[in-house]
Image (cartoon, rainbow over all chains, first blue to last red; front, top):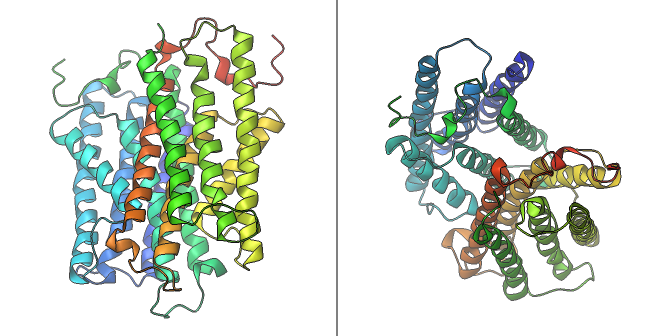
Length: 221
Length: 221
């Protein structure tokens, strides 16, 4: 039995919506993008991390359930391509945050968000580079957890910041807070759709049954 | 095939460790407990929410995989008892936060943490009270996400607070921050152990196969 096309389209469109939301948040409320060590460089961090470790990663792991009549080999190549793109974008996203911290004398890796995030990226790098099986679902759930705490942290630090440039604190729910909170809700719904697709064993393709239990790169079948 | 006892003990002991950690955080660094609208009442919030919606809920959903030779009816009663206790404690935990906000003129439900949290509790209440099936795993993952963002939020608001009572900000990683970050990591490991137990279909008990697809209260078998 195949995954219904409507559910697959829901997963793709919620992922697309998440990317649009996070770009609009950085673009409209946080002043846009640059690569100069300023706040504008940091703005790449949420965009690149959400795009790579939530949206591309999520769609890469549901790919084996997609109701397309591709060969097993085409599926593997597309899956590997999405994961490789996710790896490159996530490294750029980390650079954006670390460069910003470095340029502004902000300590690295102190918040719980940064601890869960760096663990997620470390597991993902090991998974891709050494082709060890670290459980794609584990990494995906950790990415979701890290995204939500990261959005919350960014709003608390920015809207409640001591520089006084913001008229309304987070607790007054200004438009930016409403929008970024909604981004968090969209990400959770996207995550739950992806996980619900994965949980239905009846949607596994015939002959692909234990695909997710086998390392991608050392599979010689 | 039965769930290995060692893995079940790991789930129970990580849950117990989480409760100990969250009690120590509130007890040692946040000044202890009271029910008077002060910060000390708020301290019940993390303790009650982690105990109810993560630890009791997580152990309630793995109960059907536990390698004990209980009857199906005993399992159901124990599962229902754990969920009922979780519901009562989570309502008390919500009261602790709302009473504190009310007594200190802090707005309710503005942060992304509060949005994901109130959605989780709402789904859980509907699940228990109307016996609708909302997917225990969905609620459990949402509880994990909410716990991590909540711990992060509490540390940002308290250690970086404007009252100046704290010598060291969150970014200096004082002992409290290290301890509470570690609580977050223990919660994630606990969550991943519970989810890994649930994902192994071979550990479902014979005759219990579709237990989690059937509402508890309207099951007349």
